[in-house]
Length: 333
Image (cartoon, rainbow, N blue to C red; front, side, top):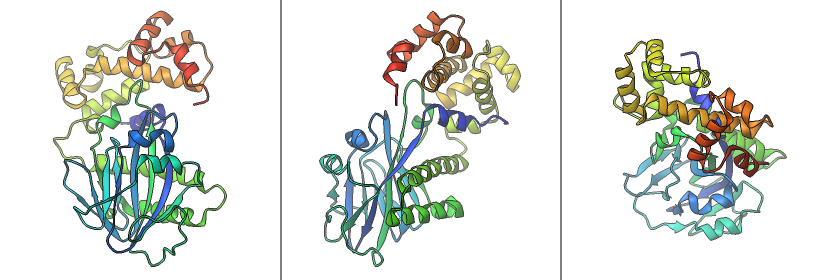
């Protein structure tokens, strides 16, 4: 498949990263994080969806969220909570956790980032001067944000807890974690920007690793991307959203009958191809609205609508606002 459909989607839904905390732990420790929705406006103002990640720079521990078995972490591991679940990080499973509550996150949001935090018989004040060289465990923590509207099929296809062990992550990610730790402690000019880019690269690489290790019976957008027929169909729809596609033509292009393609699409993406195309056209239109000042009518034509009115109706149905009003609401975003 020539088309890089994953990159298309990541660009369209504006993934952003930020490293917020450089956390050092001694002895027994446990900390609980609130649901990301409770702190989203503090860590990434104006972003629709926020998820937290942790990169283990030294030592190890456990990650847990309600309803799932705890996951053991070692140095070089990455753990992510794509749906923004509350979770606990600890030195052993089942320990009573010190809460990191939303009020504290809001109260410290204006302090320079990344913020050093030391867990040593409880949480020390932000910016604690405790030396970290002898810490048992060091974790670099941050957030990733993205748009959910008009259309983001990737997030729904990710698990609630995404763990990439160091052995899977490869040497490149180990260097990212080392660099994140270095930038967090040295705090040189431009460190925040470097850490943002590292977080974004980490997310893309983690997503690709997850895709590589999906079980054969997996469903969701990433599993569909991997499928020979659905992946090819997605690439065509992303490459030519303005084309007057029919399911018959799309089926011929990928080598399936219309009924077989419909069935396969629904199995992986829980929607038929033409519905996916309608949603992708609106997402592609939203990206153009946000990134250019071209007239709505011109953008409507670029993404496959015969008239501005038809595009406006479809856009409002999916987003809740007409295109022009949505563009104004995103000005400067």
